[in-house]
Length: 207
Length: 57
View 1 (cartoon, rainbow over the protein chains, first blue to last red):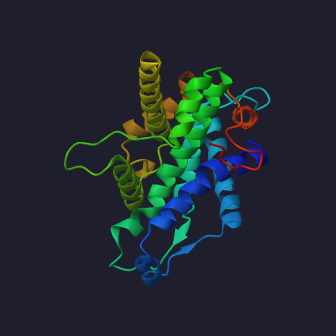
View 2: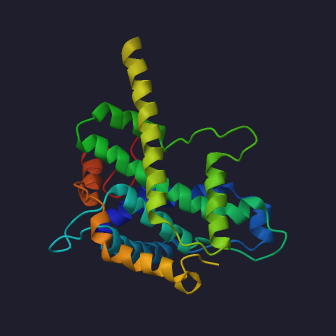
């Protein structure tokens, strides 16, 4: 991925998510726990450094890299590496106190999940456009982001459930599963493409 | 405890893990035909995003 592509994914996919998460935090929590955001340029640099390292790792272990290391990995694996990097490089730092709010505790994990899915959203629109599915690309782009399925009654929302899963895995020192994360991203994309196709079909029938 | 720690695995499990490593080539995943760089360029050319990374609605 070129520097230009990294900057684009940062501007369109990652930074908006980080901004939203920070904006959603209670001012009281920000003050009480001395929440600080790692400066964007510094954070972007380490984020993509870790991304490159993890991309190289999965390419060397799970793929045939090709004669000149020129084989490509799919966008779900790419976004899985972005998720890993967002987990490893926390964009918010705060005082580690026993009375921390749920919202703040899960903030970095939400950033990882939503940052990764937002990047996949961008690439999903791009792929639709590339293969000539212009109207679907426009329909999906208008949504602004992927949507997630409703969960069963009494369960956390899908986003919170994913954030908690990341948090629990880190708590108990479980290795990050790139391939399972990639598969999750694949199904999230498929779910959204199915919904958009269904809605597009309805619009065509009504028109 | 990380269950992948070879020191906590039985000899049989360790042998199986070594066997898998010898046959990892048979499980390699398929490569992609889509370049991330090309896809993002497509997004800019189609007017979804400006060259400087601003979202165009």
